Structure formats: structure tokens, C-alpha cells
Length: 134
Ligand code: VLZ
Image (tube, rainbow, N blue to C red; front, side, top):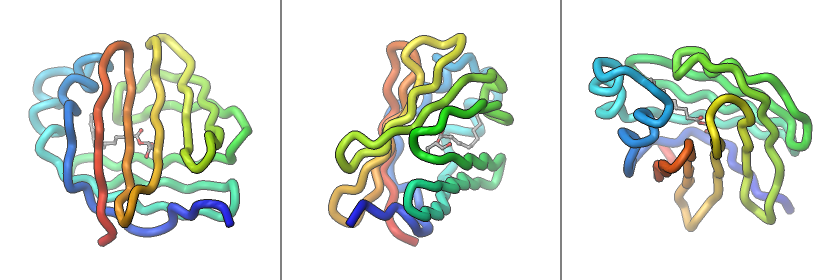
């Protein structure tokens, strides 16, 4: 049985989101608001088809993709830079490479115990987020 990330997840820790946002070029005023947010993720997974909705009181971000199929990502409401994104399985980890203007951009999701982990990468910055089931 493959891993199933489906569910509603609440952010419980967020290490270096500030550094990640600086690397993405998010302005100071937006960072001030964004760094205190406690986003929720609603993940719907059907085999290799994913729907990841990140919601907050400030902005929402919806991502839909199939593992192994490259797609254009607009990052609307984040840094608004377009990139080519490809998500693949690395064992039980879901790994996204976001190819574009920013070097080393991407993220990794995995499950650890009852927790959902997310590592967000951009240039030399790594943000680590942990979510618990709502
Ligand atoms: O997550 O790429 O789950 O897209 C934060 C919204 C969303 C709050 C961060 C507004 C997206 C921030 C993280 C304004 C600057 C992300 C992927 C993996 C799915």
C-alpha cells in the first residue's frame, strides 16, 4: 500500500519560514503577516493524483498535480514566479522540483508517526513545517 497523505492538517511548527520567504523575495510587509499564520492543509490523494489546498486567514494556495507529470506552476499569491514543477516519489517521500528563476527550489512531504512534514527549499534556505491532523 502506498502512503496516503489525505486529510486535514494544521500547522504546529514552522522553522525558518522567514528565511524561505526572503529567498523568494517576498516583501517585508507581506512577510510580517505571513510568518504568524497557522495555515491548514487539506490534501486529497487518489493514487498518484493530488490536490493540496493550503489555506490561511490571509491567502490560500491550491496545487493539483499527478506524480511524474511535469506541470506549469504560477505560485500565485506567493512570489508569483512561474516555474516548471515535477513531483516524484522517493520511497515514501513526495518530492517536488520547481525549475525556474530560483535555484534549488522545491519541497518534500512525508509522514512521520501521526505528523505530516514539509520541507520547503529555495536557494540556500530551508523551511521545516510540521502539521498535525485536525
Ligand atoms: O506547499 O508550496 O504542500 O503548494 C502559504 C500561504 C502557502 C500563506 C505556502 C501566504 C505554500 C503566504 C507552500 C504569503 C507569502 C507550498 C506545497 C506543499 C503545495
